[in-house]
Length: 171
Image (tube, rainbow, N blue to C red; front, side):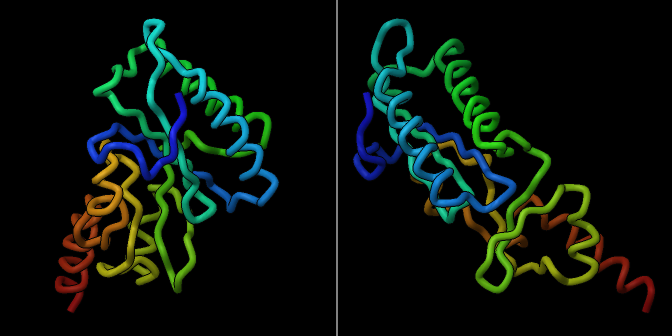
């Protein structure tokens, strides 16, 4: 059963799907309509799941489920995956590509491949204070504290150590 995202418990499970491109108003409307319909009838073992979603920054579709009501099981998670795949296909989007990372530069969100991160750091496009989006967070409360973080506080910090060592050895 669908509810408003703000009404979801802080410990609710979340999945974050990132669009490789900025979502248009038309795409957002279709995503909202189809996702609300899907979540309204989403079940696990014939039990309604209390679920919600929101679209953030025209790039992120965040799905949430309160597992205190009922756990999202393998089959129900598969159903969510198929829903996301149908959005991708119908709207010509990439929402399931985990080999891309989102970062902010000059107030805008940019999407790059993981392989390009060392080069972006070398060119100082991504710096230690650049905000990145950690789409691996799993709880709603983590969206506030661990989702949008400085690169130096994320798994990217190892690249800054390597870059600093390279700069020092070349001096």
